[in-house]
Length: 297
Image (cartoon, rainbow, N blue to C red):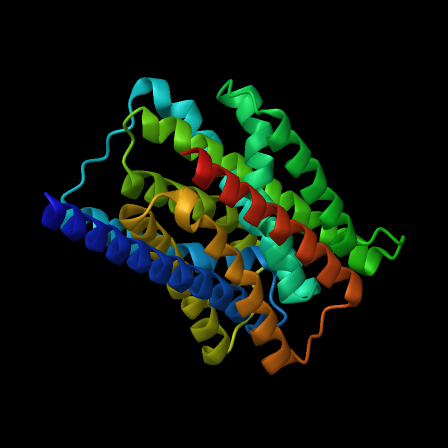
C-alpha cells in the first residue's frame, strides 16, 4: 500500500511538472503571437486577424481530419457556439488593435483580465453566483487595469487601452460560452475550427476591399503568428490534461513577462512605473485566487 501510494505521488508530481511546462509553453506561444503581429508592420488590423486565424483554421481542420472528429453541435448549442465565435472574434480584433498601438506587455496584461470578466459574465450566462472573495478580487483587478489604461485624456494611448480592455472582455465572454457548450458535449476541435472559420469570414470582406500589399516577409510573420497561436492553444489544452487549473493557471501570467522581454529586446519598450504597479496588482490578485482555490479544492 505504501509503495502504491508513493508511485501515485510520483505520478502526480510528474504530471504537475508536465502541466507547468506546457502552460509555460502556451504563455510563450501567445507572447510570440503578439510579437509577430507587431513586427508584421503597418497593416490593417482585419488583415492581420484574417491571416492569423486562417492558419489556426488549417491546423484545427487538420486535427479534426486526423482524429476523425465528427462535426456535431446539437440544436441547443448553436446560439452558444455562435456567441463564442462572435465574442472570440471581437476579442482578437480588439487585442490586435491594442498590440499595434500599445507596448505589447500592456496589451497582453489587459487581455489577461479575461478570467475576471468571465466571473462577472458567468452570473448572467451560467447562473453561477460568485462569492464575496471573487467580487472583491475582481474589483481590485480592475483597479489594477486603470494603472495600465491611465485615463489621461490622450486619445493616442487611451483609446487603444480601452480596445485592449474590450479585447479582454471578448476573451472572457468567449471562455464562458466555451465552458457552456463544452459541458453540453461540443468537442474542442469543433469549437476551435468554428471560431477560426467565423473570424475568417468576418474579416474577409475587409481583406477584399481594404487589402494592403504585403512583402513576403510580412506574410511570413503573419503565418508565424498563426503558428504561435496554435502552439499556445494546443499547449494550454495539453497542460490542463496533466494538471487542474487550480494548480497551474497562475503560470499563464508569465505571458506578460515573455511579452515584456520581447518588447524590450526588439522594440526597446520599457513599461512606465504605473504599468508595473498595474501588473503587480493584477498578478497578485491572480496568485491569491489561485492559492485560495488550491486550498479549498
